[in-house]
Image (cartoon, rainbow, N blue to C red):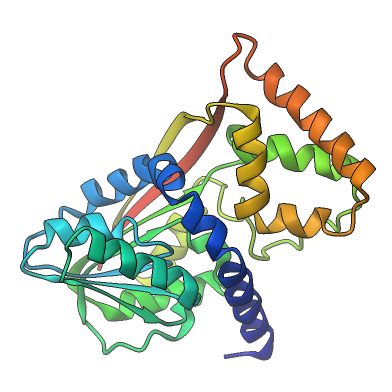
Length: 281
């Protein structure tokens, strides 16, 4: 792998390991938030009881754990670059009594599996962080059996994702942040319709389908939103790391104002949008 791609991989590994305690703390909330995308992936894959499934960018376990419950006579392997996240996934598997779920620290750009090893691949909110998305898609294609199915979900455009832009837009007003490098890993890197579908096509996938999910997430209160975002959002914490307490207080006040403007009825809802892309080998 090229040195630049290795550097991106190491940055991702360090970041996700660092924030794994926050993800463990808020796991129930985040898994409920992300469930619509996981459900869409599972529905697309038409999992059989004997399937051997690879769950890429597994994080704390979903949708791989739910897939393992369906593939009761098969097996699910969850991979991620962050061992500390996978430790949470293994704990969740034990809690749910899933003996057919295991994990492996692995890089999507260099999958440690033989050709045609899996019946299906799931990947929820991973593509946008891969060092090389085309290489990742090529590797997915390689390890799928003929006729194998792939389903992935990525965040859509910023305008459909208030849950993150509400806080990031305010931070950007007060803290200088370099503009994102075009094509570099990031939250909305894959938001353009057709982008991932084209990458899958280039890898050799066929029968490609793309659908959209648009809904809202209920944070219950602004205080919960603020606390959680500062514990699971790596870009947010990085941006605010050197800010004075006065600046942090100002940002919090303005974020709260914007948050409440999105909820004139006194609720705590923010919108989210995602794309789900399916393909077959």
